[in-house]
Every structure is written in structure tokens, then in C-alpha cells.
Amino acid sequence: MVKMAIEGTVLIGSKTIDRYILACLTIFHEGKNEIIIMARGKNISKAVDVVERLRRYYMRDVKIDKIELGSEILPDAHGAPRRISTITIKLSKGG
Image: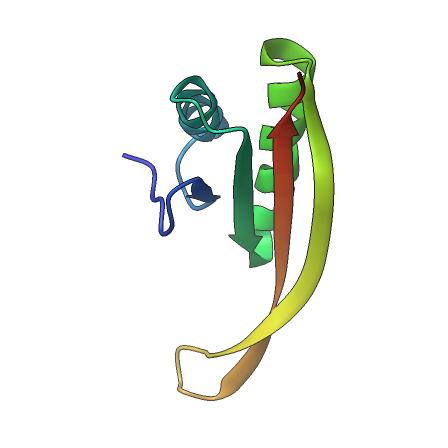
């Protein structure tokens, strides 16, 4: 199961791209008109792939409303603070 922290939000992690696309499709088909895709670090490119495949092959009426870039400070394996890049992509379904 794909992690959804907040209803309508898909957190990109280690699963395959197809799983995240399915999660997005499920949210849209449940009646939501907006979803948020979030990723950190090395999973940012996977989030972009999810959005592009979703728009290109499954739902051509999906629009990118907003992209936010940022960073978070998290501890590394030794407990030292480490800055990790983040991306948040807000999608909406067209009329």
C-alpha cells in the first residue's frame, strides 16, 4: 500500500512508479479534484516521473497547479544534521 499521510497526498518512497500512479488514479477516481505528491532526496526524480507518466499516458486533463521546492534538516546515520531537498507537486483534474 502506498503511504498517504494526509488524505489526497501521495508520499513517494521506495515502491515502483506504477504503484504511485495507481494511487493517484485511485484518489482522482474517488472524486478528489486535487492531489499533492511529495518526495525527498533521491525520490524527487521518481515524483517527477510519476507526474509526467500520469499526465502523458493516463489522465491528459491533469494540470500542475504548483511546485514547491525546499529542504529539511534531518539527522544522518550518525545523528549529525543533514539537509535534504524536498519537492511538493500539487495536481488538479481539469473540467
